[in-house]
Length: 186
Image (cartoon, rainbow, N blue to C red; front, side):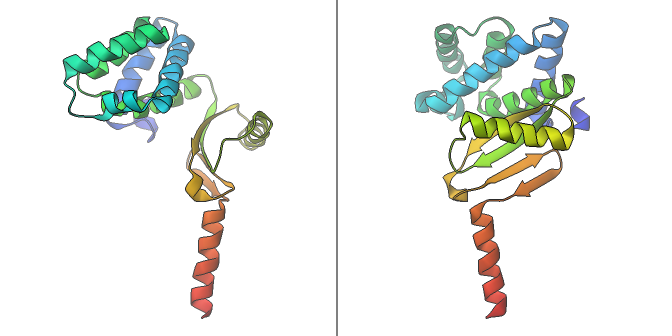
């Protein structure tokens, strides 16, 4: 499965595929996804946790112990907790965001869903998220899971990547096009 999808490759793809196959065999695919989503949210909200995950200064033992405390407090247990601790023990915790992204892709494929990477200048309202999901479903014919990235540098609009297709309606890209056209005209 991983070899068919370029977004599920490399070290993170191998780890995600192993986790997915174990979760599928144990019939806990959704529970593991929920745990990984919870960990991903913790990661976004905690600079200290990001430092623990990314910094090569912390040894595997320190990372595993600290991670264990974080997982206990967050209520992440079972296969998910063991997997995250394994990443730490193998000195691969720095890749956890890519592993989670790859796992989500595998789950979406397993469920017949599509996954779109969406970059926006600021968080979308629930109404706009639903409108975007509905629009993408009409194009793909599948339920679409959104991976939202906020990047104020795009100024406005959005960039949607769905499989090999990408639509860039960001204001930054439009301004760059205008700038380029003006240079050619001048």
